[in-house]
Image (cartoon, rainbow, N blue to C red; front, side, top):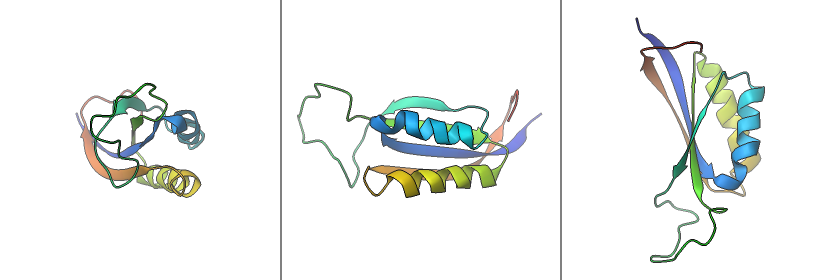
Length: 104
């Protein structure tokens, strides 16, 4: 059986990983997934052919699936207000159909 849920995706700088995941946990989310991310955006785009010596300035993608759309919007608002004036990032929220959920 499936159930509908809300998926929150935060793509931002890796240096914010601990801060953002603390906000996610404090909001009551049951979990999250973190992946390395890369691409081209309007801010902090590396020069073509530039080698990366350290991954300190790399990007991450954090995904949170929750039964509560309000929780996802609260987390998104907190992250954007606290960090996106000084760090690059984008957030999107959408509805997803979850096939096998242990606990949302």
